[in-house]
Length: 410
Image (cartoon, rainbow, N blue to C red; front, side, top):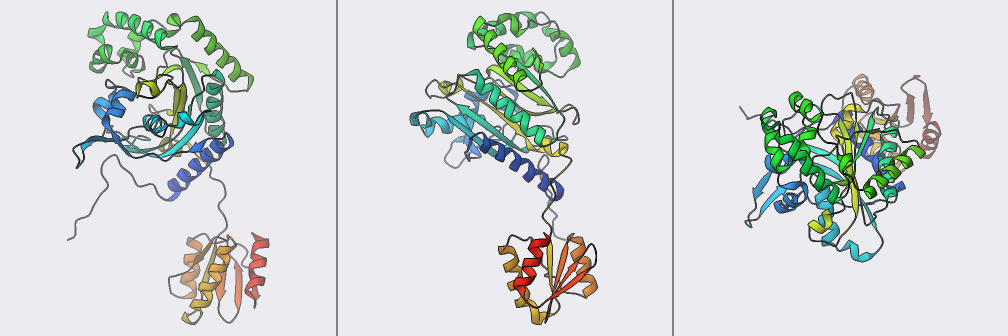
């Protein structure tokens, strides 16, 4: 007996209705990106591991626990990309986009890989669509990016809440982390094992812990707002005022920190209540120091990414599909005629299925019904157009006349 193969745990096939939702989600994002003058970048799936250690952060769970790492045949230690921003920044530097002048707005889409515990909306191979802006320090870029994501999720008819916060500039963040560590050390023995490690490696992540005992401890932790510089406070106030002015509703969440090392100033998350604990469906923020950390020139930057699998769980309504025409040759003598007709209808962008399965007329009509055909064309000495809803039939001698009538009906 031949061995039956199964997909690897944490990986999935996306097909049928979910594949339609995937494509609809991606096309909705892409159309809006182009409205905002973003340009597409197609990034490699594999990068040098040091890129993620230096950008995402060596102490993050992603780098320590979740990356797919291997040594290639050239002896290089590489990783399947766990997120898109680091590769985008690497490309910005390597391709010397900064030398072109002005600023750059890029978007990407594709598979990411993290060795996480699989659950609804979370897989080891998952797909993200995201965008980055390089070379703009204005707070208006933060407002525009958040507003764009807000608009896209509205287009998709998804219910969500938007949470925003600021981590301040590099110095503000540094001072805050010092105060936070001092506070957390008092409760170190009461924290979960991961958070005990995080105190020394990535203390901001303790604020994001989902363990109840840790949440209780951090409830009274110092707030980032207490360590912000005057400039950082003013910047955040302008962002909030601008979002209100354009009708973007948000909640200010001083505990929101995001889990990656590169964020400064604005951070934000779009959260759904409908998919349990993995409720974040899109998130991002500003990372003004990352390009310089990766060997590029000082470059203000910001971006976001959305999880497509999580959005698939939330999209309820797809736009109506184009009506399908099924062409049925009534016997082998009419195969070439039916083939030529199908090519002509497709040239007119009429969605057409040339029925390739032989059988009785009844079985062929049954197959057309399974395809959800709006019309069937029977090909013989004449051309017969059947409306599968009403049952009405029309006879044509000329292919052009048939196609003209079809176009008028569709």
